[in-house]
Image (cartoon, rainbow, N blue to C red):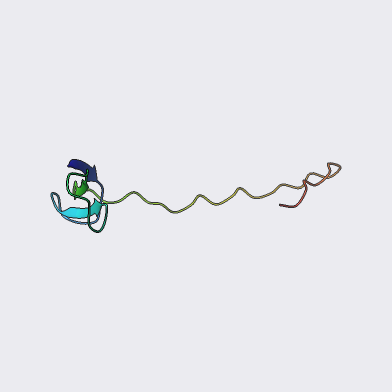
Length: 63
């Protein structure tokens, strides 16, 4: 068995998940994920910077 500490999703020491998530073959390796009690990191994507039009320069091709 492997134990991995994760952020968020519960009080410190709380099991937050396993891998595999269902049954395992006897003798196979399983991973137990344990919360460290800290808040989960913010996963909000960073917005793209605004485009800047400079007179006299060609526009970039559309995405």
